[in-house]
Length: 65
Image (cartoon, rainbow, N blue to C red; front, side, top):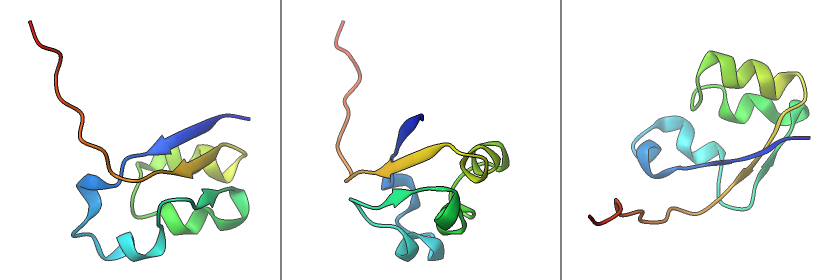
């Protein structure tokens, strides 16, 4: 199965943000938790078997140079 990390930092002001927290594991059984947070295509993939591991926010700087 595919496991994808969901970066939450862009969703802090979204009401659905409260439904997921770092450490959550999203499967087809609880896909509704991310329905408002991901694109329709990603949501469809989760509903049909893709899994997601929710991770904490982390700053990512662009490469220097």
